[in-house]
Amino acid sequence: MAAHGARAAWILRFVYPRAAPRKRRRLARWWARKLLAILGVRLRVSGKPPPAYGEAAMIAANHVSWLDIFAITSVRPARFIAKSEIRGWPVAGWIADRAGTLFVQRARRHDTARINARVHEVLAQGDCVGLFPEGTTTEGGRLLPFHTSLFEAAIANSATIHPAAVRYENADGSRCADFAYAGETTFLESLARIVARRGVVVHVDFGEAIGPADARGRRDAARLAHARIATLLRLDSRDNPPGRARDPRAALR
Image 1 (tube, helix red, strand yellow):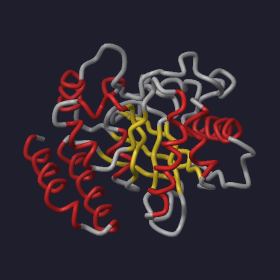
Image 2 (cartoon, helix red, strand yellow; image 1 turned 120 degrees about the vertical axis):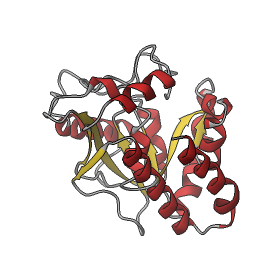
Image 3 (spheres, rainbow, N blue to C red; image 1 turned 90 degrees about the vertical axis):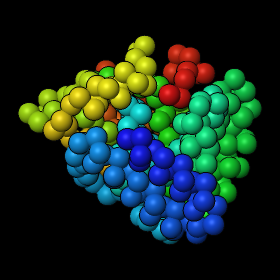
């Protein structure tokens, strides 16, 4: 893990600044897949992920673990929207910044316009954008309400939204709760749990895409994405209603 992290820092410092976008995406996918292999996590993908090129695409996924980002990136590299506090984290913040993470300032209600402009630039470069509209992590057995404001960037940029369900299973097919990065669990505690487990499978299931003509606005887009992810997770969307989260400034963990 330490060696792989150092390799990431070296690539981001010396290779990324001069690499073409396609090469950056190849490197990101390779690094993510290597990380999963180091941790002994097997990847299973179903459905149709966003195409590699030629489409303004956004991936909207449920959020269980910090490993979600790398599971999705191993399938389709994306630049994720995350809370600005991550930028200040030692080492990890620097890596996230160098990797092109789009940081949103949760305390500023008018930060949406800036994020929309940044997303427009990213999509114009052929990159995919990723977001976790729940705004925080869960243990994987439920789906929280979606922050509809996070879908404004997709609507403003006529991007196709690709709903994705992420779930972790043990070898017997049961849900692996140890991979959840929720509650008061620290990153090191989470990492220790993941390293201690073997035979875990991460499923990344893509649902039917939501095109610009399918949603009349951000609330409609959030509703459709929520329903399709709930179906992929085998949850009843009536028990996990979409809509405005109770705390609009919840942590984008």
